[in-house]
Length: 401
Ligand SMILES: Cc1cc2nc3c(=O)[nH]c(=O)nc-3n(C[C@H](O)[C@H](O)[C@H](O)COP(=O)(O)OP(=O)(O)OC[C@H]3O[C@@H](n4cnc5c(N)ncnc54)[C@H](O)[C@@H]3O)c2cc1C
View 1: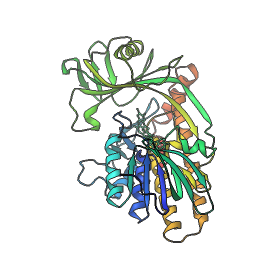
View 2: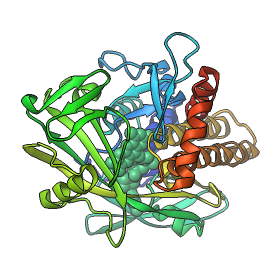
View 3: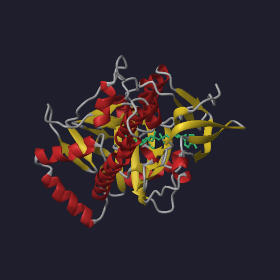
View 4: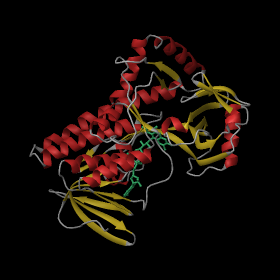
């Protein structure tokens, strides 16, 4: 179906990732007329996030999104802060909440909620330009070869780290690119080659490693997680792995050959990992950046379009909180007649929240570096977080967003 180009939309959202879809569903629930334009013709099959860490997990559950899905929010007794492990205990004093869910599944649930409440989601529609006027924004897009345009009261760029909307609005994205590269894959390890050992795994030829967190190795970092922990339907012999190494001249790529994956594992582990099969192998390079502004007139930025972090686990939590906040404000103005100044609060609340996440993710990345100063920092902070109150205080930073 071609997007309806008659009359102004309350909001046009660029990008059907988790942040755009949550925003669409939150606005549609409040009876606003909203459409999502997504460049890709179909959802990407590449695995991305494995879960939401923090407040957003609770907020989604509160909205009934998990009902009947078998998904549930948990409070993990231990969680990683860079290479360190926070011992958070069990019971009400544990401040951290996690929703283990593959990103694709999360997107399906959010899209279903958005569409059920009347939002439209159009795939194969690339936004190519926009012009702001006093009362709205004219949005140009291309569906196949056909150029078209529609009118919106507000435009929201939820179009990811390379955001077209951000660039078109002339908003800078300062920060830095990591000098490390991560190589990721979903692999099969035959049961005879791997066994549970305490809260870790014993792998033939490699030895004992911690599960679900980064293992510092002489050649870099290595993480491994049983896929069944995140997806109860996954086969028991499937594992999600990643290596972290100095980047050198290497570039991020959505397709990584088996030879490249094996070579990286050998460099990091100093041994051959006994896997028989690998899927979704790719490499990524971390960035730590934040948009100079989250708003330009009637145009807003949310999610990765506004911030990217160089340590895992926080991006979705922060991005989803952007969407909750912006939806509340747009509904107040568009539906309840609040003054337009209500929208100024988005920048003054969400930008500092992004800055806090930028800080703690940069701190986590610094702790993981393989130099003498970082090693000393790990020792000192490791002693500090042996105190459960200190560990919980760091967990609250991650939870808040
Ligand atoms: C391997 C990997 C693992 C990760 N693990 C985690 C994790 O465990 N926890 C976590 O919190 N985060 C994780 N992340 C980060 C998380 O995936 C991102 O933060 C999340 O996808 C951001 O969502 P978003 O909706 O802001 O943007 P995106 O998901 O990037 O969606 C943006 C959408 O906009 C579309 N688009 C772009 N330009 C246009 C245009 N001009 N017109 C129309 N559409 C356009 C794109 O096609 C895309 O679908 C991981 C990322 C990767 C790559």
